[in-house]
Length: 216
Image (cartoon, rainbow, N blue to C red; front, side, top):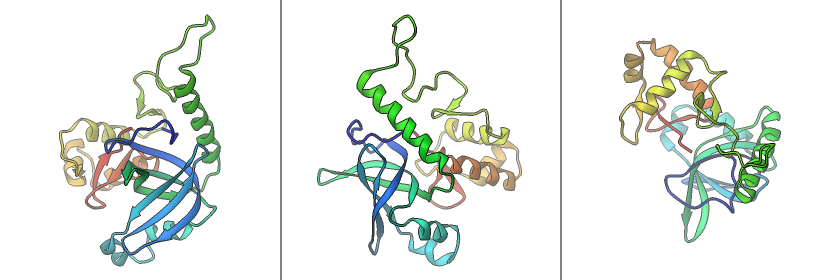
């Protein structure tokens, strides 16, 4: 979903993803706070620093991403909408720099559509009736959290459905359990997970081998 700060209620169960431009970066001992403008408003995004991860793989992909998350750069955020002392912020699961600038244009169009949906209601059809459906215009069965499944590999679809339908704790499911359930090679499950992480449908939880659904 696109982020419209004025329309969202703070709820610890609400998960969001959005694209924005970094206006300020503040590095603390325990977290990095980014002030991000997505075109509908500005919000602080806090990403907690995992000292074990940062020391175990110096110069890895996570460090490379952080190096590119600088003022005026664009990024995509996945996280939870939270509030502290009546001030809203997003607790980030993942922040990555934008490499394809078409993603920025897509986000601006999506943010406009979502804002219009919540302020004016669904668009009207030719006969003047309002159409039902979701704010992002995706209706019906062949979608995952409003994203089309058509471009997903078959294993990525099966992995997503397994994560969605299998009973689990907040920690999600481990790769070994998923590989056994899907009767697939572990390496192939990792590739499918990377595909789903890349478009913001799942995220890592307790470690890099355990995943859960990002629900919107």
